[in-house]
Image 1 (cartoon, rainbow, N blue to C red):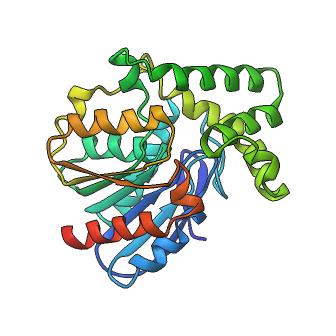
Image 2 (tube, helix red, strand yellow):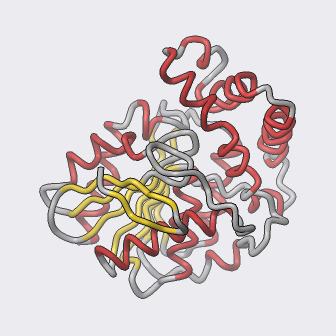
Length: 272
């Protein structure tokens, strides 16, 4: 994998295909490898770049410079667009959805489209005082306490079972379990960036200022809090379209991607 040097850290990314630039941004406790099937589908028509965010995959940990983690992750997108763009279509899943939203607002003239697969913009639920916020706040609190106490495996189990289903962590292979345990402290950093009081947090009014085409995708069997976030984002962005895929959960973009990839591919080809 090629590397990009940022803040004295190495950022690894995957690079394939030729044509207009598409950047794929992964979820928490994942890495660029989750996009292999989508990259294979897109690369005949697009140049596809998929980075590992700080602390994930083969990339170095987050810089210890006092900046919120999401600013560091957005910095990766900015650097990749400067290197390979400047114009790009951005696709983000979960954590990646929150990152590409920020890049879209920051660099509207160069972001051609946004594809948001269940972006975890939970701050919008807090701002609206929506009851669904309690589901995410409880998980975030429990995980933060477990990591603080050094109970990384318990935190990893709570995280995976929340998004995939009860018993999912125990049923996973040892390699998957080890990776989630290894990255769970970074996941807690991700959660911290979703609070409404995080510095320079976005609002629904900010999202209303997005001008490029936006596609929202969610699974019909996802968590309630993720469903409501998609509704709030959809309502905030006038030109956004929403596709719900029956039977899929939050992690389908990584674990069962075929139907999601078909929607992403069709949207990007229409925009092109």
